[in-house]
Image (cartoon, rainbow, N blue to C red):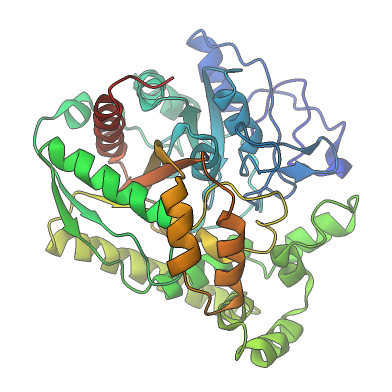
Length: 438
């Protein structure tokens, strides 16, 4: 959530209405110096930890394609505004998909850089003081070339580093972006934790074909230990066992997220989480994993951080051993769901949260729309082996025509490589459609 001088910075909490910012965040200041005109602050979900978009101040933001579907979150207002043509470009924050989900749901493009590549001075996190699951700032637009244009100017003359020495002094690398060297790209359509619905899998395979037409090599890649990575993400995202969020929510207006599984988990004392996890594990094993993930002591939190550090090293080593330059994969499990689904389906976040835990650059472009054939495959083939699969299947029904994106990721400071791959996907698919895209 960005500071804009003279405006509230609420993160969707009604209790923070009237707390005016005294100065602009560094990124807003730089945009103004470059000639940009910030003209609107858009809606976010309360807490910033949801891929729906509702709060007790402004209510609910709907999807640009269908009013009964969510625009995504946390940067959901921005995603809907851009998709509707109300803004050429916007900026959002992303700690678990908060830029990428709204882009996917609304059929637009965006990128989450590694977390120090753009300054966060004057940007308020969902949980201040959190380490190893830090939010990143990034652009969103209808097409990826606008994000390239934005970052080419933002990453120039080390402007941010002068203002914020904790941001990385890394300027735009045109050589990396414009390189004609063919890349070796790993891809997967299922992470082993939550199988995506058919439209999401098809989008990855279509993007794979598009990249092969550009001369890149596409190799099957299996990310290791995604269940452990998602468990560590769930632990790191709250940092204090949910105490900060419990205090904020206890003092705020009710009504907008009482049915949220995440909020319910956070409000339980740690001992109660462990008991509930034990009782429900035979029926809801994946919910039990999330319940057990929340740390109860400093020692447990330290262990989580150690596991994240080790996971990062192993993941990068696996990419190195397999000579992988970038990764192509689904961005979510489902297309834009109805507004109530994200509160019940937090487990669908594994595809985005993986790259937050890794602190990779990760972006998305629109590839296709849900087809009638996708819905037939959904009805006939999609698993119903546990309550979350049943919910995902139901959520993905009646989605014909909704946009579907894909995700591309690469290690820290390889943002230009991610943007290059996204550009190749977008341009090749637009060309194969026989026309440019709106």
